[in-house]
Length: 466
Image (cartoon, rainbow, N blue to C red; front, side, top):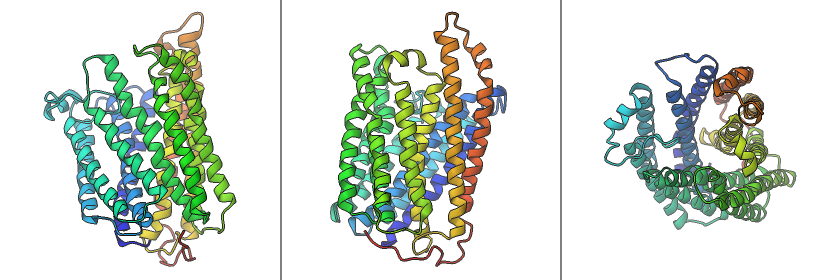
């Protein structure tokens, strides 16, 4: 770690991992509620557990992105963070607001929460993934603006690199597109049309720029490949990401009342969306093959390579499986969608945040370059447990989705929804087992920070600057 102010990232990373554990606990609860319908009812109804599960995912990834930016930008800009104090104040505001929102979901009926938080003054609640009370959304905007000011001023006053500029564009897009969360028209078609401007253009647009810049940073640090080579790749990848991701939004417009030309636009550009992810995979392995040193932090490199592969499979291959309009006509909203969502989020965003934490945390905790060998061994076990179990979760949900689509929507005598759910119950049980294994992997990831790291020289070696 070269700059004192980078240490503020530690707060964000600790909060991210804590919220991640909460998200997976609620995921395991949800998995059980699929097969034991009254599990924890009425204390935690399914709709509330799902809301907490998805909202925690979004919030902890935002903490992870912010922490990554606060660690990465000073090093790229070659100067201290503009205001470490502002970063710490915004951390506590965001954490308290997030915690109060989750407690609100769990302790107050949703309609009551809407009334308590003044939703009638500016109605924004009640939409999937954007369930946050209006007051929380305003808080998110304030935190995002303060964060962007802090990061922007640091970059402006320091060295400008492709990595920091791509990251800044991604973060700006994240903040601007979230403003559509406040637009809630009465017309349902218009509502869904612009709702995707937050949901799709975040995860299949600007978040991919954040992913690309963090991946490039970690690869520069762990491989020693020339910055110029990595930056050229980065430019090509983000160009393809934006071209396919923006117009690819159309694959959500097939059946919501929009003009039928979206079936063509959505299908064509969605079919191209795996390309930047494939390029990212080739890029990551190419850089590792060309590396000029064997970095002691093997766990961070494993997470970085895993990100490229799993993002391509989850966002690319599983996205493509059901993105073409004639296929989506039958599969829309089935368990195939859930399979794609789980692997895509894990591969593209969860793994890159974990890669950054894996690289940065040893440095912020006083190690020269990496955690001890024992710590890394535990962490790599956690990598394989989480990654393999996520592959199985995806496969089980895919099998459930294919069978669901056939029995419920495609066969000559379609069966009712609940009859089909009974027939695919075995896949839900298998998914639950895989989910428990994933949780064990996550617990091992947390344990890795406390294993074999009593020696401040653990990990050995001196970090070479790139």
